Amino acid sequence: MPTRETLTKADLAELRRSALGTANPLGVAADLAEAAEQGRLEDPDDAGDALTLAAEIAEIRARPDAALRYAERALAAYPSEDDPRAGFARALRARALFRAGGRDDEAVAELTALRPLLLTQPDAPAYLSAALDAGGRSATAETWLSEAVDSLLSERATAASGPASTAIDPVVDLGPPDAPGVVFFLLQQRHRVRRNLNLPHDRQDDLADRLETQLVRRAGERRDAESDLLFWPRAEFDRLLAEHAALSEVYGSDWDAHRGRLEKELVRLRGAGQAGLAVFRATVDGLNAFAGRRDGDPADAAVRAGYAAEVQARPSARIPWPPERNDACWCGSGLKYKKDCLPRSRS
Image (cartoon, rainbow, N blue to C red; front, side, top):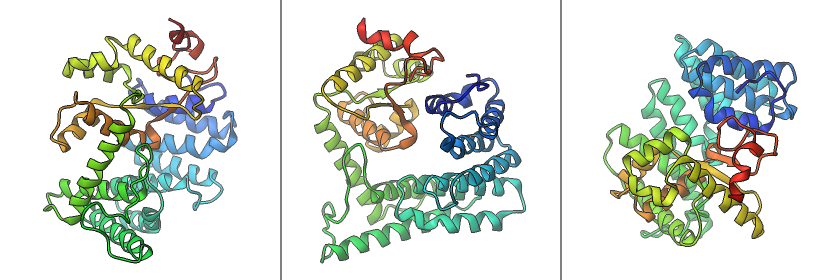
């Protein structure tokens, strides 16, 4: 997507989905930084987010100097480094410091300052543990996540005036299927980190499994009569049907049919009075990994419902709907919405 004109929130969302698949991701990162610097953002308040995206692209493409530069500019663009949106940019700065070499102490100090966010922000367990892993400190991530889980569970047990149950702990607020609570994300990320470290299964791992099972069940009950609104980008959709052909009955026989089903369902939900609608970007690797953790079949409805709940809980997977008629289509085709998916609801 060219980024020489004013960038809207929809443009930024599209670049977040597609930048790494372009021919020149680092060029996209440079264009994002330039747009922020030149005031070419429709909403000036998006400058920090645009620069954070530039930093993420540069870090993933192993350009720590550029990532560090963009991250520091992102932090300068936020009202303060304590702004809730700044946590990810600070974690990216730490990752870049690790990769730059010789600056590990600075990186650890940055992440240590972010550690309290584990108790309040659902995204923090993932981005903090990823940053620590980049510095070869996965064991530290496991310790921090474990201590955060212990702290929250103890706090909630005290608030409930009694010890947690040995079944599904009543003091753990799982939250609705599309927005699980902080403890859920802490437990799941801790579970992943411990699995990667080949550590033995413990009581908190058991709790993570039980809560995931509960989430799958609740999500399945909720979605008995509604679409999961999972969106498979074109390459993912092709791979999905290549690996799980039976899912063509669920998601469509081809990508056009898939997008048409989603567009029609969204129009139906809006007509029923629902607001704040969105689709949620899915991946085949994510579905397969979720099914593997459940010892289930990716084509099974309960497994798919659980995966959909997991995806819908990630802010980064959310694609708001509908875009403006002249904005980029939500599907990532690069066409305007009015020329692509908007007409699909009428066919």
